Amino acid sequence: MTSGNFFDESTEQSKVKSAIVAKYFETWARVVISAQNRSRPNADNRIAYIDLFAGPGRYSDGTISTPLLILEKAIQDDDMRQRLVAIFNDKDERNTQSLSEAISRLPDVDKLTHQPQIFSQEVGENIIEMFEEMNFVPTLFFVDPWGYRGLSLRLVNSVLKDWGCDCIFFFNYNRINMGLHNDAVREHMNALFGERRADNLRTQLDPLTPEQRELTVVEELCQALRELGPQYVLPFRFKNERGSRTSHHLIFVSKGFKGYEIMKEIMARESSGAEQGVANFEYNPVDAEMAAQQPLLFNLSCPLDDLGDMLLRDFSGQRLEMIEIYKRHNIDRPYIKKNYKDVLKQLEEQQKITASLHRRGTFADSVIVTFPDHEGTTDG
Image (cartoon, helix red, strand yellow):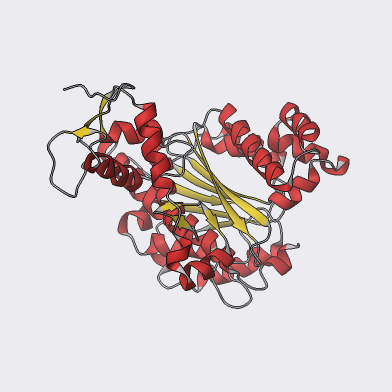
């Protein structure tokens, strides 16, 4: 797919992708600005948004894409309006020209203290080397290539190395799955996974089913990102229009738990499916339609029961605040804070745990939970 046909018409998947990025930007910016105000109230506290594959700004049907959504969020907020440095790049000069015109037509765009900067460069070694030498202000880095060219571990890490910097990138699973066994793009695959990991993948994938292949590829990518230092990696899957195949994954990478927590909440709300309130971290157009038409049938399974069993097993004999249980347990699991509070309320009602005094129907972060030991008794 060329960038030209990619922007011919917006899809529900592209709208969800843009919504996730824009919502995260808004919350991330407010958290960073609050931290800046506390630590350096009189400093030149800028924040940045960088998009290296920005596209033309609008689809041909008129729908605005991610760059304009980000700028609209900033224009509407006093602090963001004063602090945001927005940098957009696209190697296709037709796209940058279109984007420049679309930005110029945004209402009140002239109120931004720092006017958006637009470049037209190939994303490769030169940009990576420049980024590696820079000290970034807090930056949200978005990478959305139409294939995989230009996307690499070094590129992601070149921005993430500095405080307050997070990365979101669109990962074209189908093309990368095919590319792993294509010698013509071997260099690109090695840059994305690391040479050793890419070689291991090439030998592992052949006997696997399509579902196993996908899980293995995404898992290896997440582990490769973690080896660079960021502890928190969160994937979100997109299915094609028929819901039959995975098309892309949106991958979030951060060094901080707060960013991970914010993005998990956003991705959970944007998921097309949820079972007993537990999101599937996936957008499937077929699921979205089914959920609207058959909400009862769509929510029959009970993953919160699984969470309750895990908590009883993993915290056997321990006494902890709710917030500590949540922080220690939720990484790499689909549960958000509300799920933990809901299941702890259920366990308390079932007399499977005891909890410190709290208002009925609530479960505050500070509530102390005592789990029974393996023999089924609790500490006083």
